[in-house]
Image 1 (tube, helix red, strand yellow):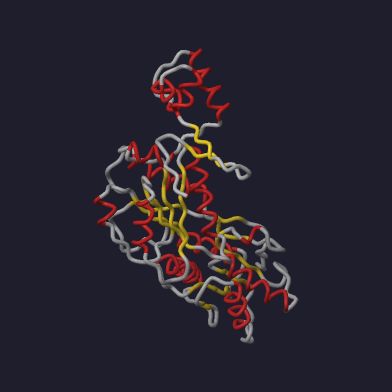
Image 2: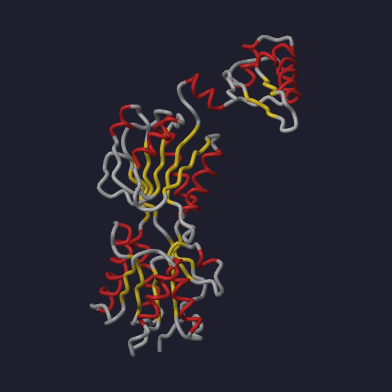
Length: 355
């Protein structure tokens, strides 16, 4: 069955009926004995309408269950209040879903909708996904954790603004929001040092992207600043962000006779894996081992809850939407790069061992 939908109309389908009821602006005009242009002015709140006529139209809208078709409005006006968002999906790591939720929440406050598309795996054609979003008439696009090289020419051709959140290395022609992973790792490692820890283990993903390099470098520089060198057998770099990776890395560390007193994990999910190993060995946090995670995801819900480096997801979402809308509304023509600092949440998983 093919439905032909006119501008500002919505199709109301009743499951238990054969007929399809289409409520239109014309229906509201006939119901109120007013012109269609007057109805449109009330719907768009775009011009003066007397209080009496406005009340008639609003009552008719409620009675007839009329809702404007946003896609049709976009087609007519050649612009929409919809923003596309491309980001990875992860069954184990809620980091990306927290960004998605905050992007959508702030967009909704400004009466924008978000069309979200998820990337799966590593073999991704980001340019096809961008074209698909453009086919849905989005007014701007946000990409979280850019998975592959992107062709900016098509966006420039159609004047579609783009904001990239994280992993935007080697791209200078667009707005970017970066998280200060170096500072987060440096501060977390320094917190352990200030509590008397010297043999501090780092578990992190192999440095494929800038964000992994920054988390690793923050640990390295904090250790070198205080001790001048890194203790032996204290670094484990894994292939992914999984519980299994964290577990195996912690297990491997304890094969050595010289036991560490603290762990810094560059992701909460790696910290959870390390904690599983501690539990198997009957090691209590923080009495037997101290630990800090990164991300403020699982660290807030695992027993026991642990200290972590927290990203300000609210600020990420707000700034991404603000950047897009600044371009949509022609309030800014220059590019912007924003670096958001994380902060430490202390949940008591670090023991002070100073003598």
